[in-house]
Image 1 (cartoon, protein in one colour):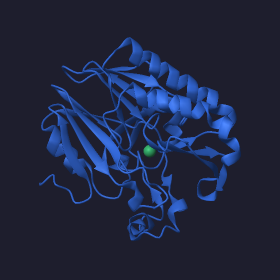
Image 2: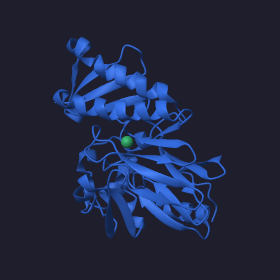
Image 3: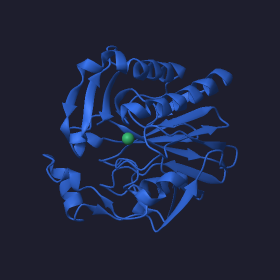
Length: 270
Ligand SMILES: [Zn+2]
């Protein structure tokens, strides 16, 4: 088949790294962190797909074409809807142990029922319940993987969600998932910011120890560098100083606050 999918945009970023992009605003305009970046790492004998996207169109045929005869591992960075809804196409998917329950049952996307976008018909045909992968396996902090010439480690990064993970590779990439990217940030309640900041400072420490790491976020711009982490850390730390500028944003049941830098907008759970 031809890998030029009209839905996904595929680019070869390095010999061993493909980026498969999907625009999540197609589902509902309220989500504007386009594109979602799914990463495909090609080791000597095994490939790793990081996230499976929105589940609108088949992604497995694209992945199969790109990986050739390699075995395939599939990881979800976390359970939020834009990352695991293509899981059903794959027999087995890994996710952090804190979020196994979230992706082991049909995923309820009925919050999209009133979307103005026609594409949600694809979800409606499934009664807004997207089936899961047949087998879900668990990841935890410190787990390692070996793709052949590329090794990697799982870093548990709670904050954005309880089971968010980042991946650090022996080839110098840090896949930051939704823990850090430029754009709209979905944050827990204000009293849980300390967990978010702890995670970000752990990643900042890592980048300071291991210079020249390239950061690959799951949304928008890539690669980034340590500045992304420090920008976000400082921005979140500053939220209490601009707390009075918050507005209610009911779709997300959140408070919306614009970062003065223009680099981020925060949605903070109410
Ligand atoms: Zn996301």
